[in-house]
Image: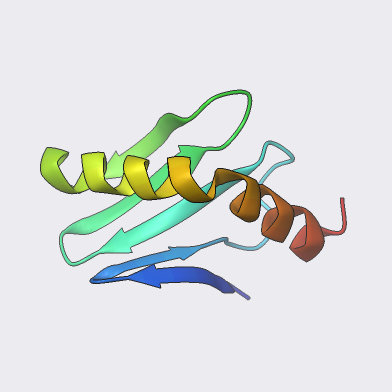
Length: 79
């Protein structure tokens, strides 16, 4: 199950089934997908084709909603 946390324009912010304990979010865009660590700081874990321009916008969104994403991640995985 991959619940969607948030949608913005063509971006879908979601989590995959439990991959690991480190909090992160996946973002799907028309060009690809990126996995971003939420802790201890925002960092790209893997990028599969997301353009630099979109990556900057994604980082801005995650920065604004970081606490919300961490809370949703924790609730989803009951941590």
